[in-house]
Length: 116
Image: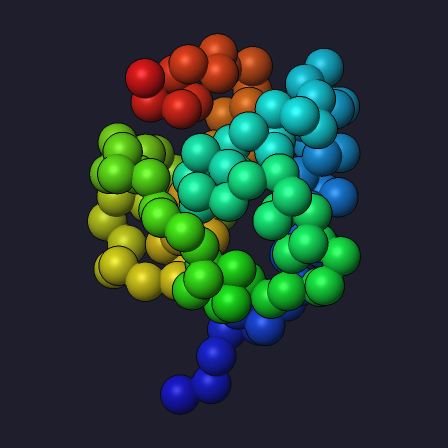
């Protein structure tokens, strides 16, 4: 079975779209970075290296220090799929990130996005 194209896509090529989506709704790059760090366990320096090195999503999630233990609290529909019903794996992790950025752009409070 062939890998989905997003798996081999560089995080750096999608990251600006996350920023743009958030900023169009009055949110900030720092908030997007906070979400990514909360989800993956990367710190700011490591995140910047991932972007600079054009690391793909498969490596990005495969080498993530620790997926946040509260990811199971991320629910809802993104890209036509209900995230809580998806099989575990890389696509589910990517959809978690998409969903969190979407919630940010929709004006949800950071403490709710970060499932506190």
